[in-house]
Image 1 (cartoon, rainbow, N blue to C red):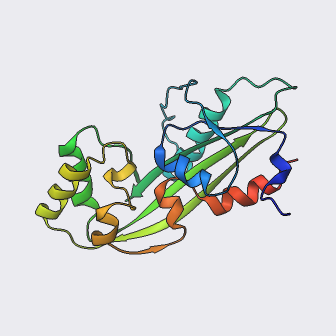
Image 2 (cartoon, rainbow, N blue to C red):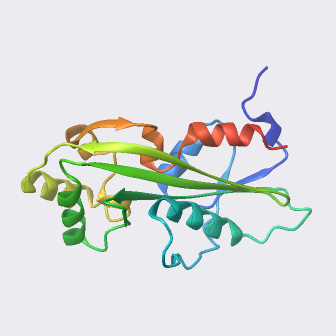
Length: 197
């Protein structure tokens, strides 16, 4: 009988993310894994780093926080997602006011969502990025306020979760992976994991 990613059966697969969305998406690949968020890092980004490189840099930084010995059988998966508009990274809003301001800036426009993913074992590290274009519809201040107060998207880059109300009511289209916009490009990750020995 076929089992997806049977090549990983001897690994202790660790998702180093507290995101419930990433946990849900990784579970879609039908592999056993556990979550470990005990190795936090200072997510300060070097000055001058190009916006599209930020999530790749941060995913590598998160992966490097796990001390792996040569005999270690852990396979660590880390990720970081950013929203980019006008060449600027929009991270997670600090409060509801900032969330509303971000959504006012995004509404009626297209933006880029980039996720950096790092897969690390004791003897190799692979980092890749995935990019999606998201086109927002025009939204009224009442609609933006409703979404922010009802769903409180303070833990989401760009102040929105595409799988929530705003994704259904306010997003005109996507080019690229929907799951990437949620926070983990699972197809690209699956292809990467198939190559691990």
